[in-house]
Structure formats: C-alpha cells, structure tokens
Image 1 (cartoon, one colour):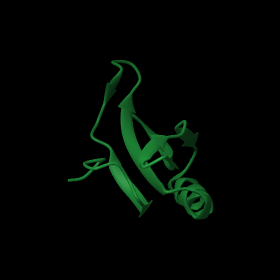
Image 2: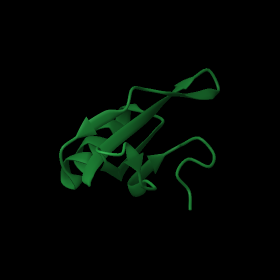
Image 3: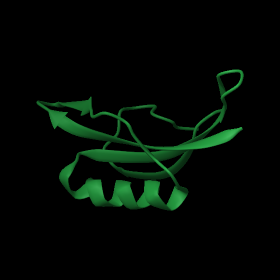
Image 4: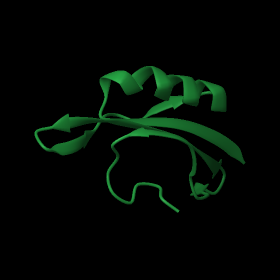
Length: 78
C-alpha cells in the first residue's frame, strides 16, 4: 500500500464552484502547506490522503487533512 497526498482547490465561476486540477504532493505536511498557500486566492481548498494498492488498483476511503473555505456540498464529509 502507498499513500497519496492530494490537494483540490475550487474557484468561483459565477455563483458556482469550479474544481481546479488536483495536485499530488509527497507528504502530509506538504499537502497542508499547499492548501494553506492556495486558500487566500481560492473559494475553497481541501487536502486529503488516500491509501492505494497499486498492484490491485484499489483505493481506501479518503482521509481529510484540512478544509478551508467554501467546498461543494457533501465533498468528503463523514
């Protein structure tokens, strides 16, 4: 199993949130730093990790590391 660390930012497009491309980073700390750096210029940002089994191409449930600002309803809530 490998751990992926991802950051997803959202910008306002009219009155709707539009997703920007997901960024993959190497560590938990880098994911949080990247999200914090992006937050002032975005409507919202979420950093999360996910365990991946590359041999079987299976993914565990994502784990939220940080949420900032406005995010689409239901995004990685739980």
